[in-house]
Length: 127
Image (cartoon, rainbow, N blue to C red; front, side, top):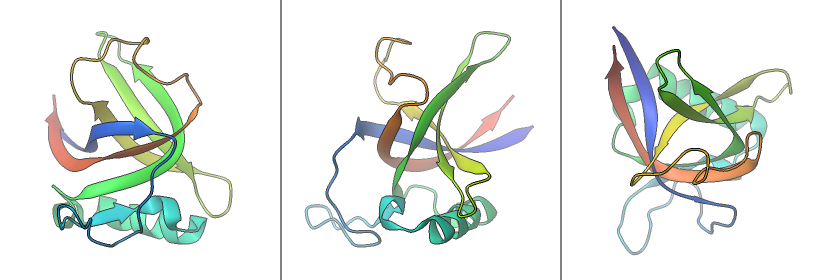
């Protein structure tokens, strides 16, 4: 069985205002804001999230990147936000799920559109 790190998406927005690593003043919840990091630091932070997922589960993360998706052979939809690493050679990112009951493709961004997502990091078991 395969464990997947995913973001339960709270919303998609092109315009968000908050500072990285600071508590949200309304809720006192730490937000891991990757949108304010340069490429090399963002790459290192993403690597740390994948290497130490238990430290990040149930924390809120904000990521800017490119939207893409895949549809499995059995019809399951997988959505991703991808970022470019510091060398502009490799993509890394997160799978995410929209909250509610979105309809594909109507309720999703266009493929390869630049998006910002914010949501809670969760683990789930595939298979």
